[in-house]
Image 1 (tube, rainbow, N blue to C red):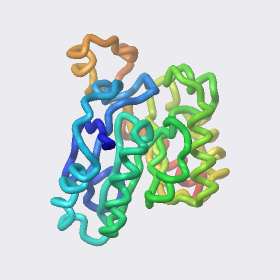
Image 2: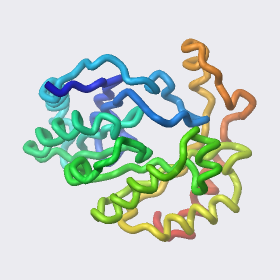
Image 3: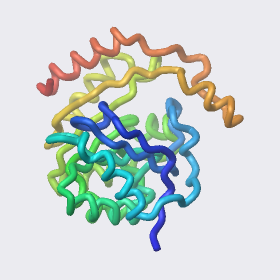
Image 4: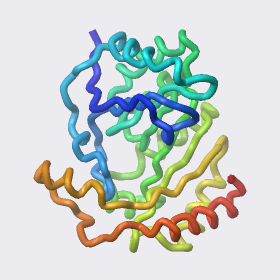
Length: 238
């Protein structure tokens, strides 16, 4: 029997997709992003749910979904447990529940089946060039681009997210490059710039893990909003 490792379940999520959502955080991730705020999900945890058990837990929240809510699989990296998520999604589709996948696109390949089941992909952009992607994630960019290419081929609806970090990508030059990258894509419904924050420092301390941005301050929210406005004007998505 397939079992999945679920790190956390948020029953009334309002930001990870449209409407009111159940957000399922899957454990395990190949990336080690400088700005990750969920380091406790780096490693695969206990296999604590069967597909039916998770489906039944989600179904308790179905009355709150109303017309445009649903379920979002996040993490960690949900694509590392794609077999488990596919089985859950097959059950959810029978109930006509909207499914979103929040991902950096770095899984184990063979993305067609899971993408055919999800309604929306929330894609986390880490960087645009391989060298900066490697610096930020300790991984190469190829798998991420492979997943993005598959999304485009299957015409998946997409939201794009980018964390903005002081002294790394909080400048107009990067925003201009990001705009050109986004213009090359289709089916983009929404773009968000997320301000970097230091709230995860305590998690790293408790886990006895180095916090590599310890000398970086929180991103100024107003500055981040201005950059987001600049980006949206360039790509004509508001």
